Length: 183
Image 1 (cartoon, helix red, strand yellow):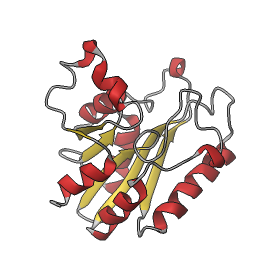
Image 2: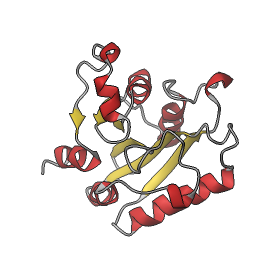
Image 3: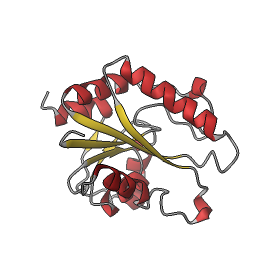
């Protein structure tokens, strides 16, 4: 692994999100510029990891084979842009199962910390929801919010202003990468 790790949420950061869930590889549609941004990160020496809540598995909307197919599509499309997604960690549990991996809990990020044998202090985590920000903070990572996906909805909530204080906000993943790489 490189010295530089970046953690990305999936739905709403890399691909289009839906309140009806992304249930098949056909429904997995990349956001404009996201795959090229992953390619730029890879070329700049970053290790790219993805953490994603996937309660659609527990809800019976899709199975693990379908989730694997969606992730295979994501990795293949990222590779077409020179991007490597080194690791994907997902939570298949329903919100009421009380697992430690479902964001806002830090379990998936802690898995990455153990896998890469490094603390996540200062590691950028890009998300589009308050739960992404909360998970990043709970794991010691540095949260960044994008306006894509549920980002605008998150930013418009009056009850989250204090919780988002100090969190950098960008238009999309490409803008985050531009900032990180100094472009």
